[in-house]
Length: 472
Ligand SMILES: Cc1ncc(COP(=O)(O)O)c(C=O)c1O
Image 1: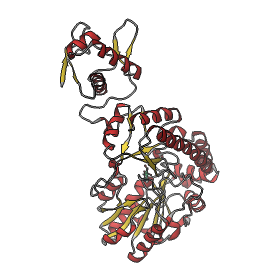
Image 2: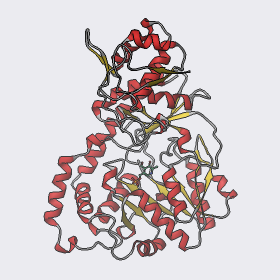
Image 3: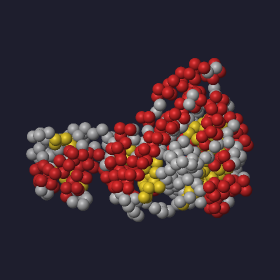
Image 4: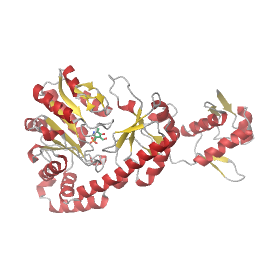
């Protein structure tokens, strides 16, 4: 039902316009509250604008005045409206951006939300500003003059050496500085590898059935067709690569599958190496959050099993900040020149100042300290999340919690889209698993992908509460 409120009735004008309220929902009060939230969210009711008196609105909508009074008072308690004793009720000056009416709230990914549990970002409030500035000062003071010239295609030798040592020590990567190539984040690394594969005549690349759509699109844009490999409780079903004889490469997140969170089973780690050797295929290992493992037996990179068939991709986007745009490749020997060639002689994608600073940051031990501190912080959040879900949503099942900054919350069948839609009403930005499904793959379960690294320390408990409110 669409009701028209004549805003000029006894309370005077409401933003000078008619207000249309679509009363839907379980009851009159809840329906009215939803309709008012929607009107505020879509800016049909501007911040600060005056609402009709409860009597006028009740009369217009043909509902009891008391229902309107209750709705106003609950929305005031939630922060949507403000009311002073004896004064009129107004729309609060909200801190959230409004969502255009045509956009379903849950998919409005570019708006600022009060609570944000989308995966893909670390806690940006924890960026180690002071340590980074110190490292930058030392690095810039010490750098030879030629460091400020055009960087070569492989990146600054200082950072390549520091990474070779760090990755061997912490991730079991077989790394020599000559094989390390600096790139502008993992995404740039994938694009470079895709270009090399295309030049070698590869037309198809296997990807996990669930993953990041921007990465799939990036591969497609380079001319590769992506073919999904199904996932189960042991990670990607490597045996299915046999069904894809034209796939010359496979992109995997073996340490912590994105987004389902499973670690690739040891048998399958061996199987994918076997596949690569038999077919001369390339495994691209996306180790995007390998620094954050919480179990006692850390899983090393698959690259440690075979450095000649695996291109290892790492990034600072989870461990420091995505805005740095700093990542790295550790390549099979046969690919180093090919990647250097597609990068070009004067690669300008990663600035040398950040490369030198990162090298100093690693060598001084500041990176280890930062990662350790963040690991503790994220593990605490993970534990709080698991406890809260067990209490508030006993029917949901959490998986993928041994590492990283996100977990999968499996919901009772049929609940995913309703919960994601409902989260928008709690000003909670959150993704369902469907967001990550390869287009050729049918939906097989209902789940949420909860990024618990995203909120700042002060926003964390509010986000957790909002999540508990929307779960079934
Ligand atoms: C699966 C996965 N890979 C890689 C990355 C990092 O990408 P980049 O280094 O381009 O920021 C992310 C970040 O969200 C990710 O989720």
